[in-house]
Image 1 (spheres, rainbow, N blue to C red):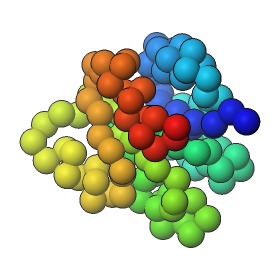
Image 2: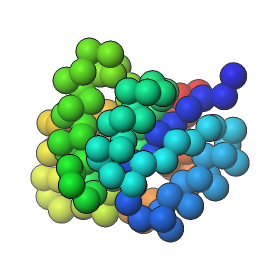
Image 3: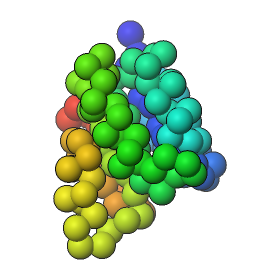
Image 4: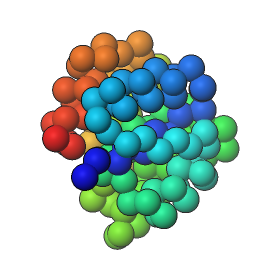
Length: 121
């Protein structure tokens, strides 16, 4: 059974890079371009992991993460923030919102895949 990863990312190029990485590693990928769409797909499909961008149209990744972690049916899904936000305090802010890990862009595909596999073998 393939493991399902939801990617919430508004930039097509970033989704394409993640699609290539994840499908090449044997994962099934669901894609959302907005936080609202991501919340709906998470509730509908119950992915094994979520890769979350912070800068999204509408709800930002912090708010989407807070809402996912507030939902008893979804709170156990690990969330890895993958963002270009790399200023002092950004990782702490992401963790306070409920994320389980934090990766900055540009990311090393090998390191990101290792982090993903630590949550979803």
